[in-house]
Length: 344
Image (cartoon, rainbow, N blue to C red; front, side, top):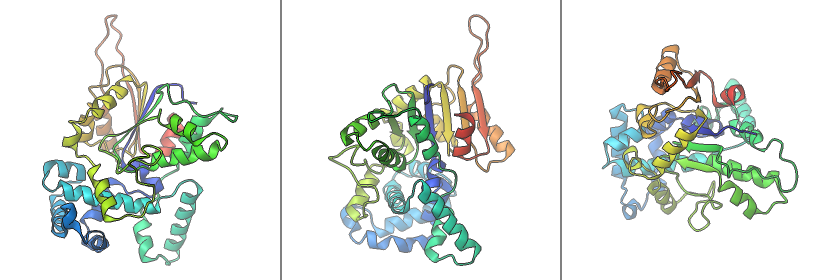
């Protein structure tokens, strides 16, 4: 049970335990010349979608030489190249989705990869998976916190009070898919319609868009999780991706800022704290009252953690009684699951 209004801000690292790439790994895949061999079968008829092989090559080459670490920033700086970038992002996310795993399957995959690596028996396709599925299963942990104490045939969690909110910078649908599957199998005697209605009350905002709704989110315009990819589906997914510049014109952004302002606790999970993303959320300026703020900084050096802290921290002026309130900010070199187990 979570009784404080809590907002989870998710970056690419939050999806890593389930097979998705970090932002750095995504850049490597897109910029690598070797990776291009994976694309041609998907764009035999790119002319119909206004994305040519030449545009794909130009984006990959220019992005690689730019040395900009964020593909979102690169697309915002180079809007003419953005359509090809969105196409590549959609392709990579949908491809990873095919191999994504949850629960015990993740642990089994990690053990298989460790065994193959330690015994020199790793296969070419496994080399791509080797850096994936990293980190503890925080979806599992958080889900069990959400349903603790709920017993009985009609014991669905109540998300209508808005105490749990997700603001995600990720394009994937892994969290939504996981929650739907978990609820359907936790409460088998409750109708699917009731479960869907419960889930729809849970606020999950995708700051830069989502590759596509799932069926339970929009039965009239959806892409199934792990659906076989084709050119038309890929282009649909690419059209749902937004850049930083486009997001600043999106009314959903005002809602995200409002939700952060109302939060009593904010958890940054797998988040990179890039200045452009902080600016999009109007942080730290939006934090106008004292609150608890926790964040992962997995693998960061001491000075880097100190800089992140200073980016988020917003010391408040004394109130009319002379009391000085300050937000509690704790940034830790740990992955998502460990942070939640320590502070949620």
